[in-house]
Image (cartoon, rainbow, N blue to C red; front, top):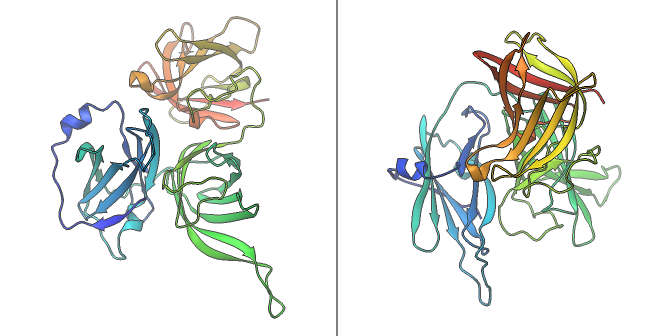
Amino acid sequence: MVKAWIAAGALIFASATVNAQLLFEPVTVHPAAVNRDAPWLILIDDSWADGCGGTVQTRVSPQLIEIEGTLSSPMLGQVCTAALVPFKQLINPADLVPQGFVFADNVTINYLVDNGNGAQLRYSRQMQFSSQPNQTVRAQPGGWTTGLLQSSGLFIDQQGGILSAALFDYGTDNLASWHYAAGPVNGSVFVADLSTFGLINCVTAPCDRAAPVADGKIYMLLRGANEAIVSYRQIPFPGSVVNDSDDAVVYHRLDFRRSAQLPLDPIDGDLPLPDLVGQWVGGMVNADLGVDDFRSMRIEYAGFDDSRGVRSYRYNVFPAAIGEPSFQIDCADNRPLDGPVGCSLQGYRYGSGQGVACDAFFEFAAVAEESVRAAAQCGDTTLAFELYRRD
């Protein structure tokens, strides 16, 4: 449960040593440029020490946002597992302060964890407000689902910088309900009021058959074209699941055309392998956005490799003509090796003759239904690698 206190003073921590010991950042701020007049969110992506889980509380002052995770004590007769339990929470500081509250230009965000021995600083970072605009992340329109809400779906549409989301749920009470939200996207962040709709008992005609009632809020962090972290606030959680926490859930867009060659199950919980199998056209794009070396290509799934200590999934990329693969795309969850989750080019060469070796990386969530785009480096030249599906 998220609670807010307006703290009178700021706590100062020497946290450089703490941060250096972490293999990843459990606290991130979104979007890339935080604007005072637009929504922004803090993502906590961490794990509880055991299966009893815990609660997160947030204290806010103009100079400091202090987030504290407290491990829950077992209830009578409850046995907590020894395994770590991952959790995600989206925190909207603007909803935790009174109207007229003003943050300082520089804000410290401290994340503390209490596993029963008192709160200990786990991570600290600085945040600055910016006047720079954010590039809007484009979500793929359609039906989105999460395994944590098996009897509901989130339907998303986006036109330019405006996004709409409809939550349809079939609850344990055998009744259907739905909620709707619409509004602007700030970079990767969507925050909007949720309205619920229901039939009206008409006393005097004429009257509308249904009317919206403001019922809460939705926080959404778009991780790419087909992945979103979503949290609901101030509404009864969808009836398809019993959930008394504020944990966020990971949604992915339904994929109706997934290749039969690919593994059926996600490679690691909420990380489905992107489907790159098929006919594409693409290549490197130069700095002035002109098409430079686009080519037709056929991508086939080539299986997995465990030799590096993490399982990587490989795609062979063939030219349009029959022949050997011209390069490979390697996809893996490299977090156990303190690396990113995503796909990289292997053996791609740009230019005439033998060409120049190129490096490019894109996250799983960046793979849209019909296209892929990633920053690339070919020798000393900064380019972009693009793919567009043809089948």
